[in-house]
Length: 543
Image (cartoon, rainbow, N blue to C red; front, side):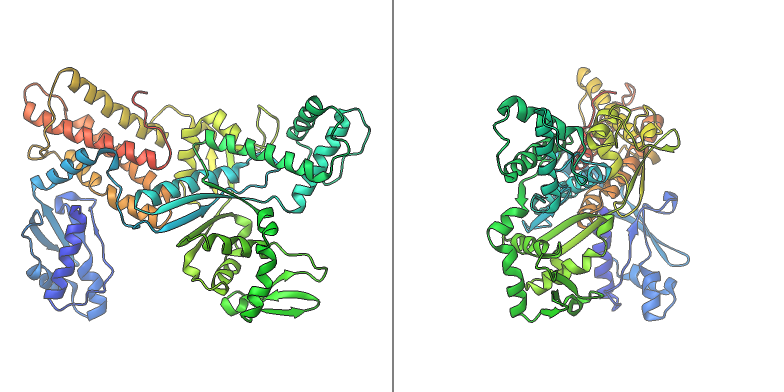
């Protein structure tokens, strides 16, 4: 348990001893002005609203009941209008340093999730073309969420839902077949709703070279299979380049073939959630706080998109997952209530599904929006981004912003080799740590897991920030917000560079301090490396 959590725990115990309410929401944080304390809490002011008493008086009551023994707290002061300020002992960070050194690349992980099972479904682009910027954002953030959940003790399955049963796949097959005929010299008009991409022409040319005209009389379903597999293989390849690997690919057609889709209406009907109106079959989603009921089967007998989606989520839940996460595009916002209604109607709890909506991405260069790739002359794809600014920069850029906000990805900023680029700044901190540690190793200088000599303000600032890492990882995981971790890493880099600029790490005239500072550098490197790993970015050893 870090110092922040120790103080929180002891404050809760003090509330019990002081006969004050314990269900109060308060914080323990590092104040901007550390001369007034290493940590500060607003607990007295939060309680003042509940018990209608002066916060200074409440702070005094808590202080009288606070047990400093075994907490590494040297002194506690009360400051207006009711803050409790805590001063920690110089040796309080020794245990933290030892823990980080011992756990190394496991530092920051925990068993909070106790192996509960998460299924995270993301990207799930139709296998009809390249992955665009929205898919790229989903891929980066979705994979980061999976890494974070795994780090805090959940079992995570990355799932890709292959939409291979709809009209778009029919149009894909028609497009391939027509291009195949054209490749053979047969004059045939291209369908109005066909796919005009160069990839379709490439598939057709490959078929011509391999089979000549032997496929001319094959059913359209054969071209569906060829198109789906070719496009999906291409998607998988670029995702793996982006360091995103899926555990499961679930086929929509499989749900139909196994009867899962056809079972849904009778199943819901038995539970009283189905009715007929205007020749259509309706699902009573208003029974689950939706703003209106939804059609599952149209009057012409065809199914709406919602029906196979309900079957798919039933399929996931019956595979034994405790929680489902769906990452969907901005145009799916109205879908959240429908999915929650479906989960409840199926006999589960709506809390078992979390739908994350990602907002739009604009690509910027020279202050202007960029819509076309210079390389291809077409809309930017994930592959274009990886080729132009690199996998690390692309992943970091997407992870560094809340997925719920619109985002401008500036190509110029992402490739800058300067401190103006947050990723470069963090990578430089890691490379600087490695360089210092290599120098110490060459000179055979030992590290000392001790903090008694680390009295400089920049050393304390760095140590306190490092002590927050485990808490930040857990918070980023539980809120599914990777940007909280990138923000933490950027601040960590700032504190490390400030420490490096003011504190001589290897000082021949004071080797005792040098050995302790080397340990501080070592644990800083571990935390940066571990944090970057959680967002899928490589920690560089040299710049």
